[in-house]
Image (cartoon, rainbow, N blue to C red; front, side, top):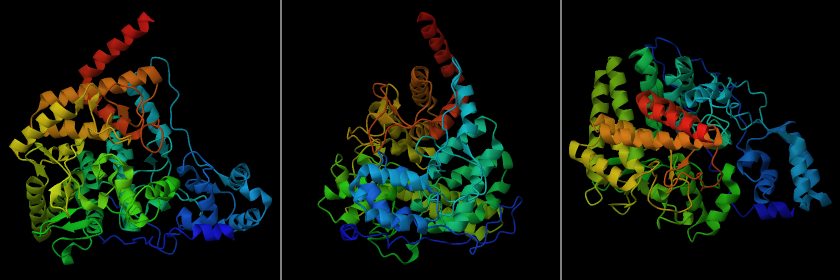
Length: 561
């Protein structure tokens, strides 16, 4: 068929190989994790591009849906072979060339699994009450795998989704959501979330970007160790022993290949510098267009002079970073087609892996494995020194991202510079200088801006995001800079509450420069929204006076209308 000939021009995901590694047993668990199904009973379909073949290609390239993520999340109403058989017949009919007919075919053979992500707003409802009312709306019950052809990966515990188009669990989002769940008194839900991530590690050898088949080739910023810290606030040190196998497996995933890597080389997510020191980078095990952004990735590769497979790999690695997308990853700091994520050792990722190493040292010590504890302390100390030496810019007075092939920093200032403060990596002078840089360059009227570059990408100016604010605020608090921490918090709270009063909801990201509705990126700003709710709920506990002032302002505004 002509369709098949047209499809042959792009490499199908033969490179999609899933890591299915089991957890080692731990005899020290106080509260056992859920027993996972055996390998024989776990059955997941291929990702949507392989499962639906020409149907996938036609729907995504002909723009049947405004959002490329729509189709890959649909659930077929019949077994996949039956749907494909019907599509073969449809493709031979005169109706095949009609986009309307193609959409009708999809609507007849698939259904949505979208759920409500916004609680009904009561007039004058305080924002804390609104957030607490949203948690059950954003909660999904344990998956029963009602359709074996769904792209959703089943989870054994209830979980909280971000909202909007994001109707599945997301890795790094969940840490910031869990901050708010704790403030709302939902300790059991926090434990459920951590248990789900441990389960994903057990089943797949890592935590995927989200619980979808098309996310299995990558992860996201590794916050699992920080999630264990949250569980430990109410479970005590036993949490570290209980989650030790999962922590170790995640570390092994991120460090795969490190032991045999030669200086100046990289393998998957590990980079060995010319002097022998180790850093990490973002990566994806596939080099095809993302299934959930298929047409967008085809277009980006068309605009690049590089091989398409290299562009697609870097786009996918950018998605693993969570900053999808930002001038942090762009060679010209402006054009998405110049993306080079895999050439960069990022400051945030390496700070997270430092914390994972420190957490493994602590967990092994608690488990009386003192040789391993010493080994991971040494690894953490070495990484801390590398971050201080290699990722610090004396000229910019900030931590940055490192071009490991070129032995230089990218020079792009971003709010990720606060990560070494959050995890206590910076020395006192670096922390003070970073704080000054944050205040003088990245602090805007509405909070911290992602970068200073206005590229049209959502992780650039004028946008700010909840996780950036929390990392900086808590990092500054760690180093005793309460003044700047409070300033950032109060500005961010005001931004959230201003939009809440005007729109009656909390959203994914905010314009922190002029407080207009945020834009940019591949999709509109989403309602919900998990990590916004979580960070705001936490900040309103830390800085209640900021909330009181805003409440009074809201009252005056209402009475003046």
